[in-house]
Length: 547
Image (cartoon, rainbow, N blue to C red; front, side, top):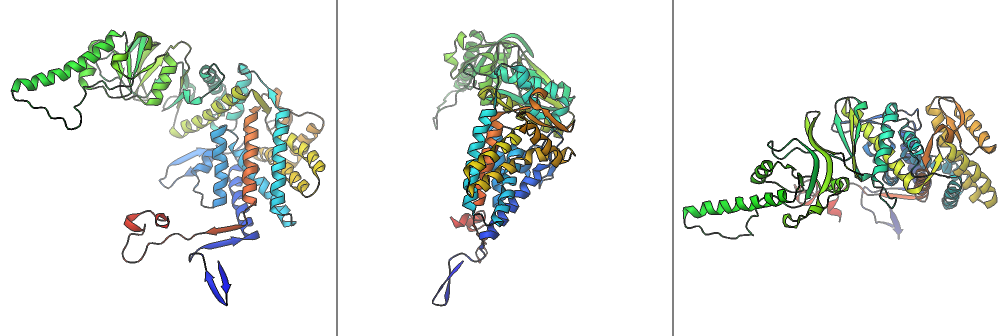
């Protein structure tokens, strides 16, 4: 980048900096974003295919989850990275619809490209897209169907739709039943759901059918001492956030010992201190102790003698979930334990699972935290099952929270497309072109579902559109029958929030990419001459010296 001043060029950018401007910059960004959308498009729908991703270390991931695919891909182009962000946001917010969001964004940019070639200004397209997205959210709210959060059958349908097309689909009856039970147990009285209270454990071995839900917690720990009981029935559970070990002396305290018997007295005093702690725990009536901190050998011995089951260094998140499952309070001081702080569990036992000891805390009354143990023949199978179950857990919690669903199978996108076309004609001007482009772009979802199922996309879109024009708002594509079917009756339904988030994210990303007309990329910082390390000063990572 340079300016002429009296015939002398003035360089204002560092040597090696590249700059793309105007149409060239837009074409480059749109092409990169479309490439990302095309990479995941073949995974969409119940007959979508999977991707195998191999990282630099040779680790393999096999999945058709859009967010996972994009996370694993080593993407360099800045516009393509923005598409990855859409998928990440969609996954974090609603847990499903990641592929749809990216594919819609890619199609919005494809439609924008043809408008740009017809000399429609990017800001006009951006404005039209924003108007269309706002109208789309209005239409979605109008066509959404209310459901009761206690309607287990409908929640199961929502979970099954999320799992369709994934590796977990073959077992969706079992898995979706588990997911709905788990979410309904952890719902708080005010109707909020945090799926962090559903603790998912993966264990290679056995069959997928061995996957089970535990009405309580499963913790990846073992008993602190082999002398402790392996099984405790009708357990009184103490959750402790304090160390069961003698307190070390403060900072640099000095202890003067002048006679040999004082050494023994000092050691005895330490042991007595730990003995007193163990006695206080036993006196509280606790039969099971989960400690967030350490339990030293002496304390383990005394607890084992008292017949108390104890586990040490339990994660904070597990302690919090144990509190919800058993009704116990987390105690921060051994001196502060009261019988009211103890929780209850029908059974606490140590079991071996795939060669590893685990602690099962089950038989809890009205547990507000539960565990799911996923089993399967290989790590890749289990990882894909976990991704499918995560999506199902998220969508069920979305429906419980919002109490709104829409039909699946491309039905809402077709309805939006029709209504947005009608809306475009009322807007007029150049914005009308952008709104019509937005309407056409939404049909990429039923088109992709049809293509991935080996059906003729044009015939299918015409058939679905005809059904919607005849007033059948919930008709979408049944890929098994190859014709439009009432998705609501077929039980193919999705949370409203998944659709609104996908359309909002896609429109925002497309608008942001369209508004860029200048890409200035700095060159990679090179190390200075004179034997300095390539990373810059003192072995700093590349680029750090620029700040």
